Length: 143
Image (tube, rainbow, N blue to C red; front, side, top):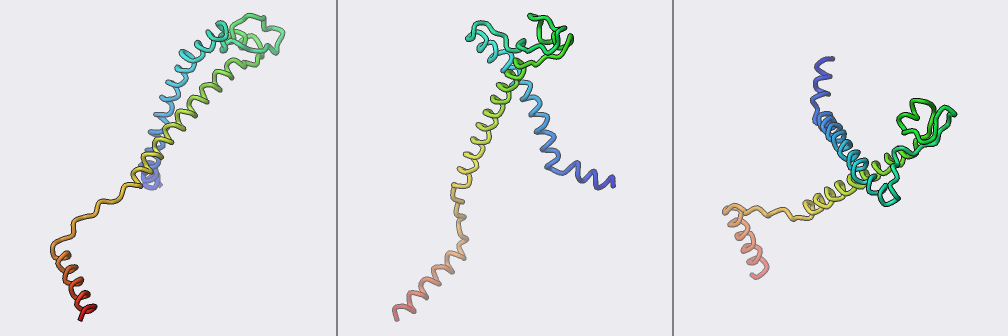
């Protein structure tokens, strides 16, 4: 059983998947920072200085209006639609970037497939045999 697990764990697909997950997590952190630190402040500035991360609807009477979202969550139940909006923008950016990467990869792959294979130079003896064949075929057709 240990040998079978070792064979499974060291298979190329599992290693590729692990690398993909690690890179995906790092990429997710970059995109999250891009959304929260660059895009959402710009959207907030365009909309009059709004901070979407603190938008929520209180569901408990214990939550006072004007509290920060993190504090409001500690006090009672709230619906954090600002956080949802931020994550929706985050998802849209990730999906678009992945679309562009896959599109570029498919374009490169189609270019690779479209390239004709280089014709290898035939050896001299094969060329000579081909010429002899052609001469014999010509003699048979013109007696």
